[in-house]
Image 1 (tube, one colour):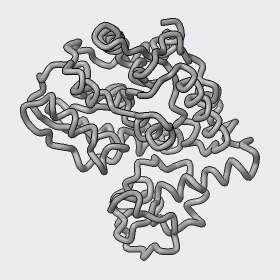
Image 2 (cartoon, helix red, strand yellow):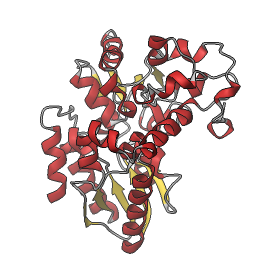
Image 3 (cartoon, one colour):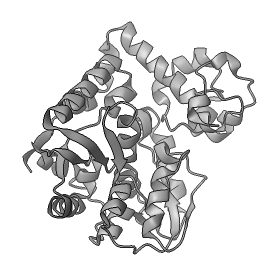
Amino acid sequence: MCQNERVKDADKCIHCHVCQENCSFLKKYGLDIGDTEKLNKLAYHCFLCGKCSEVCPVGIDGQGIIMDMRRASVASDEGARVNKEYKRTISEKKEYSYRNYRHVTEKSVLFPGCNFPSVYPKTTKVLVELFEKEAGIGVVYDCCGKPIADIGMEVEEERIMQGIQKRMDDAGVTEVITMCPNCYAFLKPRLTIRVVNIYQKLKELHLGEKCLTGGTMFRPCPDREKGEWLTDIEAFSDAEFQTLEDIQCCGLGGQGCAKEPEIAKSFAETVKKYPQTIYTYCGSCAGNLTRNGCKQVRHVLPEILGTKEKPDTIKSLINRMRTKYL
């Protein structure tokens, strides 16, 4: 069912248990998305992966319902509880600590996001230099605002978006090139300028090598329904990818890992059972799965750009801090 056809109406739940059967979080607590009274107390245990919405036969937007619960929780105590529980995330992301617009350019600009430069600093540098040399495209280092939005801080989310829009408008930016599927899904409906994914732009500029040979793909949550990114990535492969369908999330989604570390770990344990190389196109997924022992995980962008870089999970924070001074 198309996302825009879904409704945030838990009363429509027929308690068929399909969402429960497909979601490790709901299964753990024996709940359906219609059990709102109990779910309200567990809203921050959800990974916001959207699996419940994807499988619901009556079109309930479970992810949207959970987000409304979180927003209501923040509003009820003016954010006191979440400010305490998510202090570290809020401290870094509310007013992004490593923001850097020194290399912004008119028209097109690369938007690497938070996590890709953290785990793939070499590939980020190669891409930035390639875009600047071949197309005069600049780069900005900023957080899209999704981590703050996921916590339920709606007022701050809007402030962050207005700030990004204004900085882009002031610089004359008309196109934002995203390297993260989460940034893309979050920014595209919120910005008034064109938002494209990195593989679409590489195709437009005839850059990157067609060096992939298909294989097994772990799709990040925001691209599982439409598959826009995967379609563009397959232009750099001589064969289609087989997608993993039995793994709900990488474990980082929606801040859920803080409340449900065992469930988050179980996702990686499932990935580890696959002996072959597992490709993905999300820096967060690649980094988190590798950090949890999935050594066979590879991001497709270092392959396409020829860096063959593996995720740097040890110095990820230091790498992210460095973007402020690039």
